[in-house]
Length: 290
Image 1: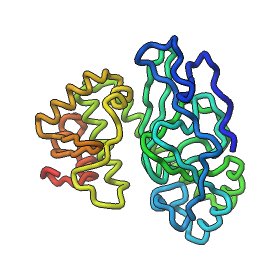
Image 2: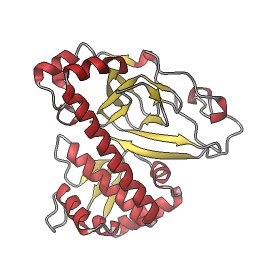
Image 3: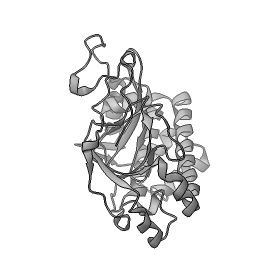
């Protein structure tokens, strides 16, 4: 399984296995170790897919899904391992089965910008055509992914055109989410950006969870991750999270986020009435505290 060639040295993408380059700033980021073919594992049958209700294959019937068992594979990433690096050739489409990933880009001075956080059911990579990765993708937690090779696309689209339609729907969902976050980054205060990130993650995790999470969701992101996602400093993120805790809106314990008052978190974001109503519905609010 080929995952492309190593990026150019001038992109400062140094494998973590060899340690950071001495010329990088003290807080500069380097890419994590990249997934290799040896990381492949025995695949899960499509009939046992944990994201069947919200994946690329959702429109397919059970008998159709069984045909995909001949095509798809499965891999597992450890936390901190990169699925691919910026500049790699993309020859696979990945669907997250379990765990969390984030995409990011590195600047020449070593600063990192996290682009998005991806959850089970989200797609990563390319399927309709091979391409070049515009960013890197790294595992936040131990993550299992289903993989489809690009070379299968013509055959699969011909046999299952509903997969191509679903692929477009998933890409559209990602584009809308990216546009909303860009708007938040451009016009919201730091407090509003963090509130938006928390309520968005809260809604997405609760929507996809198989079990009732109540007011708590897993929170594997560190303050540094949040800072790199929202264009803030870790100190600023720490201070705002501390304020939200003091106000009784959230509680962070270990690697879990307890949203004690999602209604107030929505209010901080200053959404328009329609968006606020949709988010309150998504988290099961009817005007009461969740």
